[in-house]
Length: 134
Image 1 (cartoon, one colour):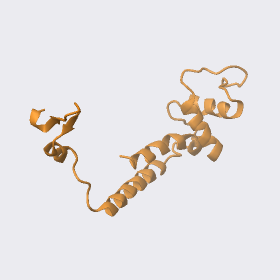
Image 2 (cartoon, one colour):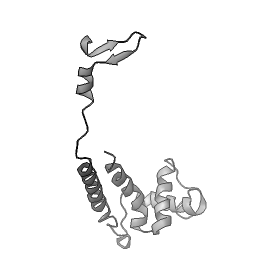
Image 3 (cartoon, one colour):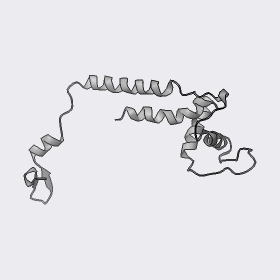
């Protein structure tokens, strides 16, 4: 960085020159309303696309995706017992990950039931929320 873009003040602090400030801190767009309209529209579109086929594959197909085989049962036992149980519910479960994700899935199951939407809604809602922040 060229020396002319920063300057040292009498008390020893470093200040940015106006030239560097103009380059780094560009003014916000003047159409603030339209930027909010676009942000909300993109967030809603992303949410609709994310939630549209959330229940597929369906539970009646007896097909679960990847780790749902383990996490659905683990989150159900966390919700009802407070700890993970094995698939026969008579002993401890195989605990390989911290329980935060399983608790999120359990909250979806508590709100929407033990069905594909219930156990997938927790994982689907976070990207839809973060989309509005970017």
